[in-house]
Image (cartoon, rainbow, N blue to C red):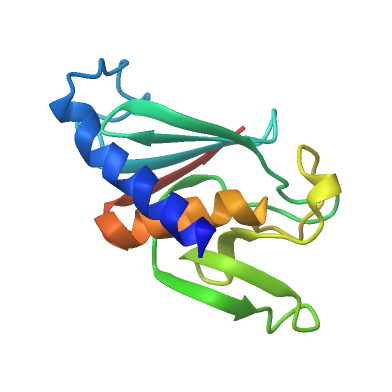
Length: 153
C-alpha cells in the first residue's frame, strides 16, 4: 500500500509541476513536441531518465541485454501493461509492473537488483521493482500511448 500511495503522490506532483511554474529543460533530441511521459534508456550508461512535460523527474539504473542478446533501439509507445506478469519465455520469471513496448520486450521490475547498472537481461529493460512500480502507475495515469520509450546507445 505505501508503494501505491507513493506512486499516486508522484503522479499528482507531475500534474502540479506546470502549475507551480517548474522550468522545463530543452526537449529530448528529435522531439518537436514532448510526450507527456518519456522514458529515455541509455544503453551505454545502463540508465533510464524519466521526463514529464520536459522536466526530468528520475534517473535510475537499469539492466539491458547481456552479451549474445539484444535490446531493441528506437522509439516506442506502450503496447500493454501487466502488473503481475510472468515470462512465458524464461521459466515463468517474475516481471512485475511490466510495460510492453515491442512484442515480448518490456520495461519491468526484477528480483536481480544487484545486477542493475550492468547488462544482464535477455533483452528487456529491467528496473528496481520500486522504480518499475512508479513508472507503471505514471504510465497508467497518462495512458500507455502517451508514454514515449526511447532506447539509444
